[in-house]
Length: 433
Ligand code: PLA
Image 1 (cartoon, rainbow, N blue to C red):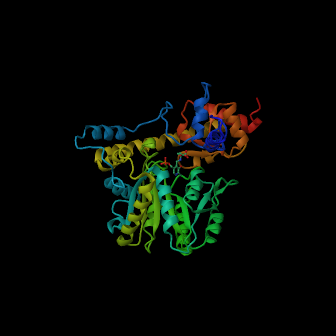
Image 2 (image 1 turned 90 degrees about the vertical axis):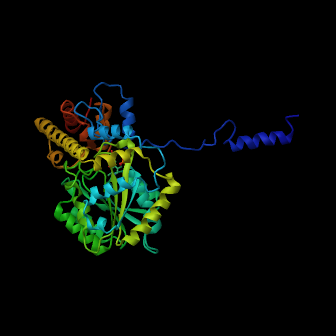
Image 3 (image 1 turned 120 degrees about the vertical axis):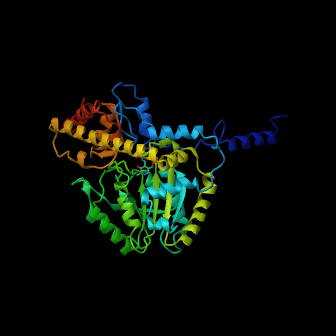
């Protein structure tokens, strides 16, 4: 009975829907490659060698190699936990208003005319990545009609930038940035590429501590870039993921952003901020997106559209990280403690540059390694080839991204000699066993 043609057909149809006999609906789905940065954590975890070292993802570690929760953050958390008025209601779509206000003030300076005039639309975001993504979606939808949806990214840049803007519907182009020969900025190449960009193109700039190169424009070069931006009518989009982490000083690291925001016109621009590194709030996903507009009236409409991007994506942002960050920024005592701890982290990273440089020089390696001292921020861009990086991981159990970037924040005085020995090995004899 069950074997009637109709029953057999029904079984076949079920099998087809399920992707073939015994198969899955997702039988055709291909294995995706591991993320080039976050995937390094997995290879590190899987490594059982006691000498293993994680210099992949940019996450600050103490001298003892441990993750660091800032004291200012711990204290803010304790105060929040003890607050009887605190609750777990939804935040507004745009996030915690106090956090948004303090975030833009942190970037632009509290008395900035754009803030005073109410010309800055700010929404809370899922850390820097979320701010970039919401910003990119907004631009893809709301750049003026007929204008190209093009974003110019530095070459190289943080790997996720391309995907974020591409997925949001922006056409991605590159501008020259790093000169491998001088290990410095290819400023002439950068200016030439930007001069050829169509008017209205979006220009992504790393506010400070360029990732992965550690090479930033000089103050004079920033001024020239602003002039070029205005002349070519480009729209600057600052990615500020390391404010305070480069120099140890929050104001000094905001210089590029403030220069552009203060330009006459007034200059309109977009700004993505992350509190992952400078407040150590990595997993709390605390960030903000600001759009600096010509007028308060435009800013109001822009904010209403940013909310329309957010609502169908994740409705409203998480509360905890933003509440911590707002408290740390608002409370004068916690704010002072934060600045002290931030300076301490930046200082330790700089000390690691000195230590690594000393170790490399002591081994009399060929070439000039002074770039280790000169590069700014969390990373050193070593120029090591993919093959050399692979040997570092396979033979020396040093886990890093395959573009030769190492997270200086993952080093300690104890691990510096080991890293230098490994680099010497791959540089002088190719790492042969
Ligand atoms: N922008 C830049 C330039 C970054 O380097 C990073 C993080 C982000 C934005 C996003 O950070 P957030 O979303 O956590 O706030 N880059 C890290 C981590 C530190 C990563 O790849 O996600 C890196 O190792 O490059």
